[in-house]
Image 1 (cartoon, rainbow, N blue to C red):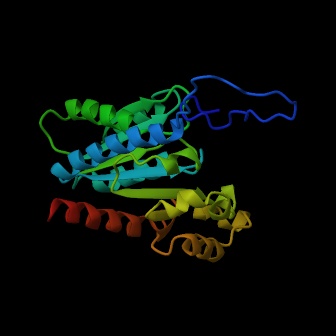
Image 2 (tube, rainbow, N blue to C red):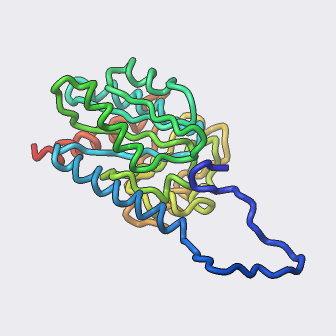
Length: 248
């Protein structure tokens, strides 16, 4: 269960008969309040990123899809040309932040302590902590690696400009159908670990078609971080986005 949004909490449904009569009771829509506060911070984040001509990218996926490995490879390809920042979301540990720092990015670990997603206020706080590391430098691109989950992260705007959803071949081809909001709210869909295609029943074209039926605007990449297949197209796409954001 998520400690923040309460997903997975048993509902208060029962079939025994008794009345729920209370005087002076006011119903508060907590869900609406939660999203309203988040969206306010998200807009502030986006405004701040825009003022700095900084491209912000939110990566969402299930655990084990290869987000961090793809991020490592991406940093290796971009670090000589751009200054890269990373906000690493996890329930616990600093392991992923340590991994991307080792590849040449500035990084701050965001540990949620139980929440299954990042929220805009935490990203706001994390970004300012990241700025303190820069010593006067300006970031060109900020990657936000969300907590491993295809459900809740799709509902929370973090102020990003681009949202990327990843699915790995071993996870199976049914993720667009099972988790449609992750695809309808994303701009990019990446199928990872395609070097494993010979070992799994995963029809790439069928998965692409299903994802596009949910969101025809999706930009789709198929990538193997082991062989490097498809990595060049992804890097070129990012370079174009970063340069456009900077007005180069």
